[in-house]
Amino acid sequence: MASANFSVSDPQTEKRVVNALNTSFDSIKNIVNEYKPVTTVQEYGLISYYGEIKEGKSIFTARKSEAAIPVFAQYYGVYEYVGTLEGNTLKFIKTLEDKATIYQPYRIAIVKDRTGIGAGGHTYYDDINR
Image (cartoon, rainbow, N blue to C red; front, side, top):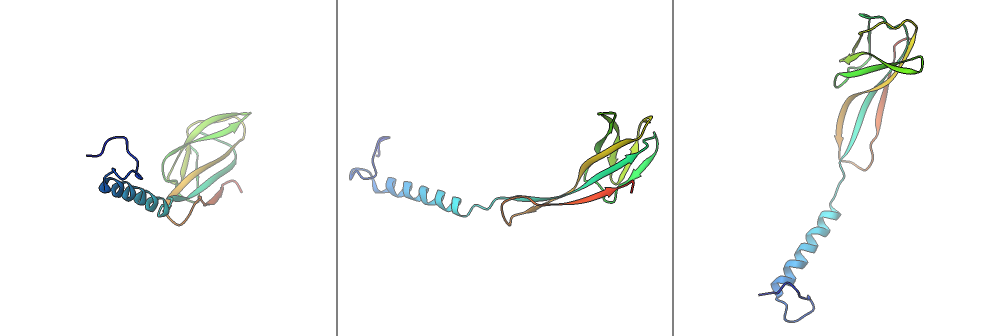
């Protein structure tokens, strides 16, 4: 039986122990050589809006969001929560007294791509107030 302390060059070390170690090292080498990173390509939209924000008013994006997301408007140097984008509809839940800016990305979809390292993406602009 092999002891816990051994050397592969020691003739007293059992051949099966040396073979098992070599097989393990070969397996690790194969795993490293065959590794392919999983990358994702993300598609996302960008809400670009400047105008009045009135409670109950809705605006629509060109593409549907993957999930419901909270939307914030920049209003006098602070961010105000103004509603939630669900699908392609953003319904305002409050009224702001002056015009405000919304400039916020949202995710459309994720596609797994095993072709290489890095992530690319596509941006779709929802210039709502143009």
